[in-house]
Image 1 (cartoon, rainbow, N blue to C red):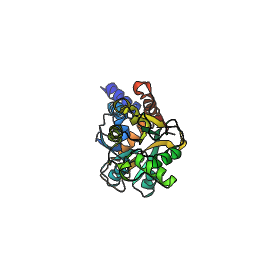
Image 2: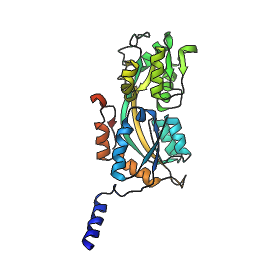
Image 3: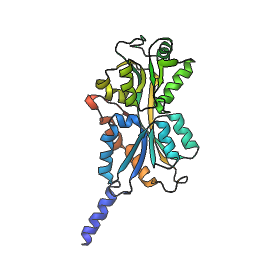
Image 4: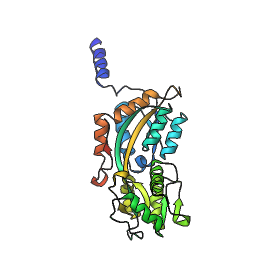
Length: 266
């Protein structure tokens, strides 16, 4: 009997994730991690390893951070570094870690009415889009993608006006569907574009500009601000997703053989 108890203790010590906090973890995250299929692939591995359920709320980065700020979630996984740093600096978040990156692309109709296809300068492409008659669909939801897009228009000092510019207030997948229906362009993360490419028929018009770099970070909600949050669960998820195993699983996520996210945990 004593030998069995000793064996059980050794197993507990050898597998730190296996007997962790059982309370469900509430995660707010971006539509790109959900629409791309990454979370559907990644979280069951974490849940099986830890016995801890993750409940996902998929929204734009702005809303994901708002949910975290209000204490409605325990941890957030987003992609807007300036907003993330502000969130932490104001004391709402702790233990921020780099997780992964990919990039943005401009997607549009294969007919390319704005003649921006093949370009690698995002600001030059946005100038052409502003000057052309082509339609542009904006996320319009304060997401990481929306923040990036608005930054490009601000950098060139102009943007499309009137019916040529549609602010959708929707997630990335829905905006890609809209762009296909309206023969329009949009800014999208590469992962969601790849997931919706066959459905929409949209083509990549512009890619490869360093200004289109798209890093993701994970942040625990500060338990000093919201005493009811599951900080132990948040830390468990952060530690796993940035561990060698979690990073390897992110790299191994390759729908149709294409790597959509690249691990970046230090």
